[in-house]
Amino acid sequence: MQSVAGKKSLKMNAGATVHHDAATVVSGSAGLSASADIAPPTRTGSIRVLTYNILFGRNWRESLAVIRDANADVVCLQEVVPEGSFYAPCAGIERIVDDIAMPCDYAYLWGRNHKRLGNATFAKDGVFERQVLRAWPTSPYGLSNRVNVGGVQLTIANIHLSPMWGPAPLMFLPSECFRRIEAAALSRWAQCVTGPVAAVGDFNTFSIAPAYRRMSKDWRDARRAACDRPLPTRPTYGLPFVIDHIFVRGAAEILDYSVFSGGGSDHRAVLATLKVPFKSAFASAESPV
Image 1 (tube, rainbow, N blue to C red):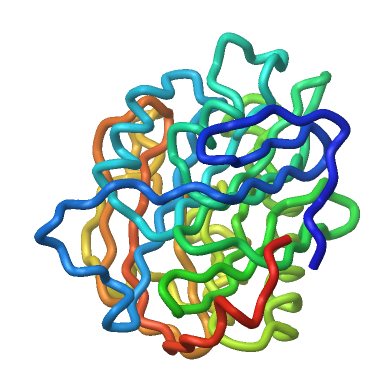
Image 2: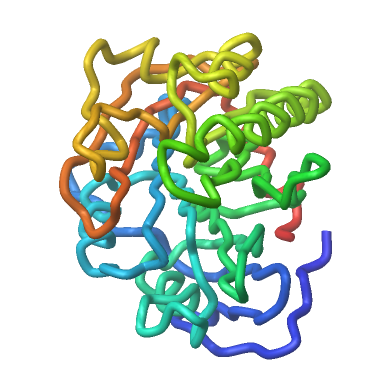
């Protein structure tokens, strides 16, 4: 698949290029460094997936420290803004790409009052294909890609379901109707995907709510499979909300799950290790988006 062309580009480290338009594709960078005494997890057919809502990159140094500590093979970020946006001086996509230094795909999803936000998906050995996920009548709710890490292939849906456009908790139930629609659309989309699939990100819903219950019909929750009492992922309100999730379906086994404390966001980063089929020919058979 051909690379997506942008209206304006800026040169980044190691030859990577960031494009300013509705889709951003970055390639040509090395991954985050890992300790020399840690064996590459992909040798055993496993892949470490991190999801993190970074709150517009408002406190990017703290968020980056969490990402580096996680040492994930795939990093999925939500609430990523373009450089020079309304949210300045928050960290934009160019700086984030430079700091994480992995191949990346980025797409705007939704916004309000000229505040445009998107999702960015990074993978150590390549980000392939792409599809922006949408369910009428809502705005786009996710970005899907096929990623490669050392021969392990996985389709990743980087998700940010509809937020509450209004005061909490009054607007939770009206907005949950949209999230229920998006969750159903996500499951229908996944039925057409070949191979293992992971849907990760900020779902803005928790275990007793309709959207989560719709997801649980067709997906396996990494938290429930591998962890009894995780930290809340949205501690801002002082309540034990877990609204950032990692769901899997197909030939993917959940090995472990953890939630990182600290960071520079009103969300916490979530990490899961998944065991998926090993296909060494994938990297040579696919072309980056």
